[in-house]
Length: 107
Image (cartoon, rainbow, N blue to C red; front, side, top):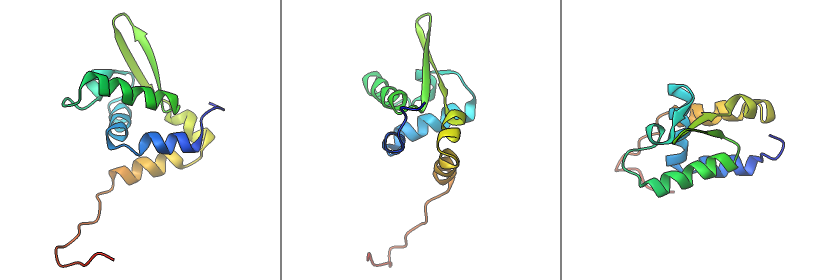
C-alpha cells in the first residue's frame, strides 16, 4: 500500500468504465469475477486492460480461483492511506451531474 500514489488512484478512476467497475465491486460485495463486474458491451481485452490499471493503482486485489479471476476492492486500505478520498470520489460519482439547459451560453 505504501507504493500507491494519489496520482495513480486519480488516473485510474478518471475513466468512467473503471469507475463503474469499482462502484459495482463495492456495491455488490466482493469478490466478483471480472466478467460480472464489467460492462457487457466491452471486449475482453479492454476489460483486462481496465482491471490491470485498477490493480496497478492499488484499487483492487485480484486472485485466481481455478479458471476464474475474482476481484475485491481495497477501499478500506486506501481510506487509511488517503483519508476521505475514496468516500469523496464514490459519493461524487453517485451524484447526478447538473443539467445544462439549451439556452445557457458556455463561458
